[in-house]
Length: 83
Image: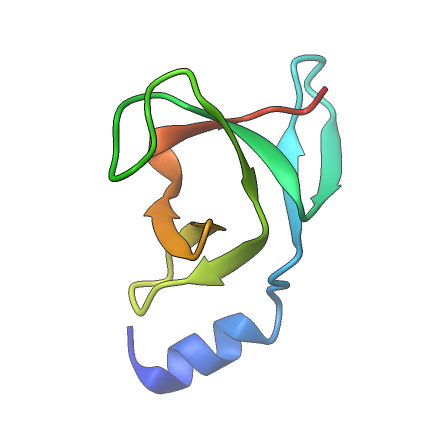
């Protein structure tokens, strides 16, 4: 993704809001901090641990990552807890 494309994408992104589909198939808006369930050991995090995402970031490839305890993690290591 070029810098120009990334800048355009960032116009529509918030570092503190994410929209997710819950178990009732409803779109809900979550604001940071929100809770995540760790699906597998990654870095200092362990499977089945519940952690808090304090910020959302975008990689140069346009992917969302979770900012947790001062580190960035890809979303596929987590389930978002909506309750």
